[in-house]
Length: 441
Ligand SMILES: Cc1ncc(COP(=O)(O)O)c(C=O)c1O
Image (cartoon, rainbow, N blue to C red; front, side, top):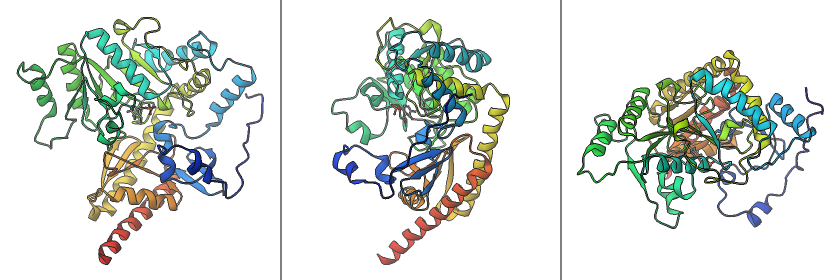
């Protein structure tokens, strides 16, 4: 029980001043350009702006809010901790909050899956977890290169950016991005090309010009790269290729993990055990910054302080993360997430049938989903039309060609329905706009 009433923040006055953002905030801002409201309240799968307008949230903080906004029992744990003067910042000092998290994580996540990985806390962003995983793979193998895949996204700091595929993001680096070899993801070269055969051939051919890499880094579902999902057999073969050649397998589960696909880790369905697993976004479960790498014990070879950082002990995030893990301790929880995923899939299949004339296809897995269209520009128009209807839904892919649908994983079928109805209306309207523009041309 919390010892205090939940804190309510008064919404800003109607018509809140938005000029300050244009005047003061850097040009690099992005989501707020697509969704130019001033948000003042959020609960579950809904947000409200300064004028009291309600929005249904199918963004989920790009995967950082899998349990929705402000889940009450998690918020209560956080408030209790603060009121008890629990340490908030602690570098990587031992704290009670960290111990509680580690105990619960072992009990609820690692042990039931037979994993004996160590937990490396990194700087609190996904990209820093990826940097740490690359350093470990390079240290363990003594090799330099990482194999990353077409469509992959792993973050924007230089090492992780080198592994990220989008030319627009890579172009901002200002320096050459090296030591990454790009290989085709499943399906990239069409149905006739087996991309694992292709990869194996290049790795095993001394004349291919490809050096043996330290690691493969892969997303099981490409959250930023257009919601392409790898099949379980493809992932199993990739893991096998890595194991046979002494290459480490890194699964970047930063966006697809923490329940997004219906299981805690996104690779569970494939039955593989990665050497290194990157987690961030929803690991804290409350939108608080936190990131970690799970490392097989024999590969835990970075020495004390070699991948340090001031904010590796976000105790507030440990508290909320522990509270969220309590949910996974209940067997009913995973079943509930899978039911929600099935409801989402069924409705998206209906939408694809309704908009078959637009080449609408359903992409992704579980509750990390996409809708693709024949016209690559349509997803962008749908996203904008959805916003005017009170639905937050973004685009994904190097050309923004896929509509990304990511409600909180706890959103039940009846709660999904109103958002999906707005989405259907937005698709119809955006497609109509296109026809009208075509008529005028
Ligand atoms: C798969 C994946 N890896 C890494 C990152 C980088 O995380 P962050 O933005 O917290 O640095 C992201 C962010 O979207 C991601 O989706």
